[in-house]
Length: 216
Length: 261
Image (cartoon, rainbow over all chains, first blue to last red; front, top):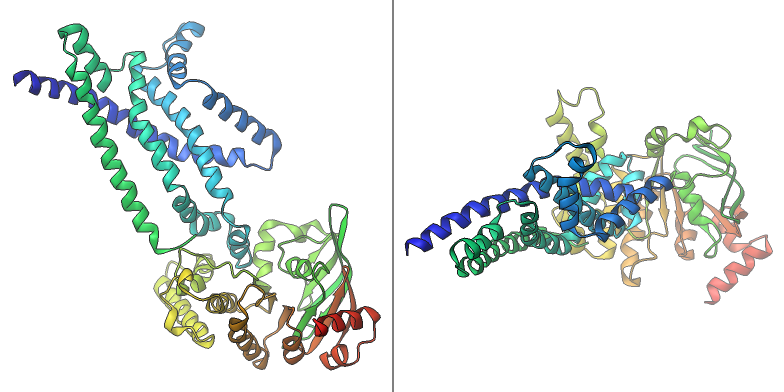
């Protein structure tokens, strides 16, 4: 019984990093993704081309590789360690998820009928006003389902950070195999993920219900 | 002095000339009906007046003020256009109401945002917003929707939605209000209520330009009819003349086809 409590507490310590990484990634990727989506829809061709190439590279290579590059490359190239482990993980995750989010945003924004913008224009609204007061909420409503997919994936993707020795949940769970020859703590980590994803699912359902009052 | 003077407007999309040297003017308080077959350029002309398209040549004047002059790039700045286009209102074929705002908010939103640019906004915020809401209620009442103010667009019929759109345009008191086939997206039994509202506006001498396929309505409501074909104004005159005694072959042909069909 004592082991169970000990294991639980230790896993909780790892879970703290999982949650931190998750929260910081969203904090960066939600706004940055929007900016990237504007770049990929820009009418200025070089910018559009550059943004789409960047998205291609990030989405086309493994996140695990990106983690390693962000953490080790500055040291290998310039001989400095630019980031701590956690910073490196947050940067890699933030950029990676921005690129995925940007495509979801782009899909949502492009699905809004042109007439919504024109209606705002003929009423004398500014571009920013049209986006914030008319377009944004419609986009949010439209992208809720694909976003919930990505956000739930993120919860579990955080376990990749163990490759640069972040002591997140799976890292701690795995350690029990080598250090104490216990396998069950690793299985037990699944409960943490399951509960987190369950709560997020409820949160998304709640938001979806909140936005049911209008139709797009 | 005419309220609106349009001269030498032309517009091409790629190699297709959609408007060819359009000239007309109209007096305050009149209703102008713009008729013609699909693809004749009526909608493009309306969109040019509302700055949704930029003409390649020509001048648009309202109350003798040059709003647009193709040869003067200064009149084509985005910042200027935003305020200038308020001389015109536009009611779209597909309503384009804002789905996440209720009826009242659809009508007040633009006016509230414009009020923020007033220097005294911060001081008199409450009073200004109160006035805007009061005006919106009046306008909604005048289109027969005082009962529906707190409903959302998807809860309304097409005819009701289009009446909200009309109220939304009216509340900004434009000099000229334009209608782009306001009943084309409606079920036949719902066109009547919208046409009635427009007729009411005509009786109160609202200056209007109406693109329409409803010939009987155009005949009843308008003071002037413009017939367009292939990007040109082929014939213009009072409705009795254009409908009763058209001079041009193309007008005759169009009307014959319409009333046969």
